[in-house]
Structures are given as structure tokens and as C-alpha cells.
Image 1: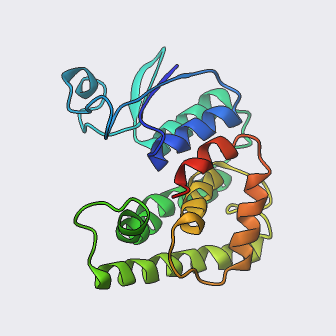
Image 2: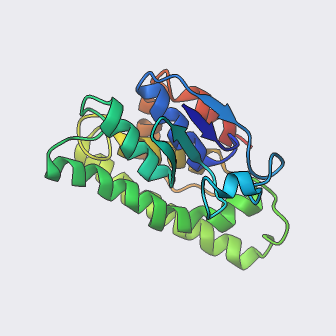
Image 3: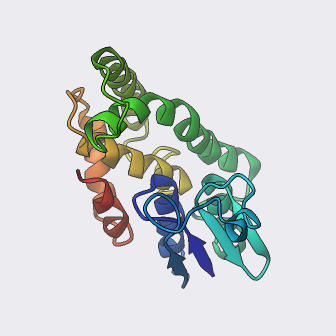
Length: 206
């Protein structure tokens, strides 16, 4: 099994963390910014979007990080990371989808400006707006964690926490004015106790 993508990508690390939670062997190859270019014809043959990550196994290539994670859990898991029953599964997937749309959209500008120091991301008003949106999204997660007392989908760790755990660590590691969110902080500490989390979380520390 091969994973194509650089470890600085949060989407690549979703896949790597899922693989490690499932105890699966894999080889990772550096593709993307600073490494092999994703507009290479060989890469585009695997993912015509030219984006990382890409998983390649005996079934061929697969792209989109959440889709890859679902596939791995379905094919190699025992139902713990992604329940088989439709309602339980939907409860996990709704938080994965929320992370990929609402939460990612909130943090992008502030993270690129303050953590990555990316050129063109230096407008103070946009940084302030992104920080406010990011804290707002994390406050929504705070309310959810207050309800469950444990993880995003309920009492048990699931794929939802792979997506949200990396995003939570990114929020904590980025130099912004953080909202006071004790349930989120406790959640992060809970995830740090998982052996598979540490190697993939550390890449977000500026």
C-alpha cells in the first residue's frame, strides 16, 4: 500500500493516522509543494485533480482524504472506526464532512498567514475574520464535546476524531487568540494519549 503526499498536509495525515489506527503497513512518498510536482503526468494519471493524498493499493488509486479513510475503515476495520449501521455511520460522517467544509474554510487564511507565513496572506482584517470564524467553529465543537463527554460522535473514538483531532491540534498550535474551550482542550489531551496520534500531530507545531 502506497500513500502519495507530504506530511505537512493535514489531509495526508488523516490517511496516515487511519492506517496506523488500523495497524496497516504502507509506504509514503513525498509529493506536493517542495517535493515531486503533482502536475506530473504520472501523478495526474492517479488523481486528475493534481491533489494529495492519493492511496494506491491492490484495487488501484483512490483520492479525497475522507473517502480514503472511509475505504480503509470499511475494508480493513472491525466497525469501530466507522460503524456498519446506517445511523451510527451517518453520525460519524457528518462530523467528517463538517471538518472538511465548515471548519477547514474557517481556519485557512489565519493558518496560512500566522503559521505558514504564506505570501499573499498578510491582510490584518482577513486574519481577524478568519480567527473569529475559526474560534466560532471550535466553539461549536466545544458544545458537542460537552454533550458527549468524550468524542465527536459519542463515547467511542471514530474516524470523525481523526479528522477533527488533527484540526483541533492545528487550532491549538497556531498563534492566534484562542477562545476558552476547556472541553476542546480536554479532547486534545485525550487524543494525545493515543499512540497513533503523536507522529502525525507534531507536524502542525509552528
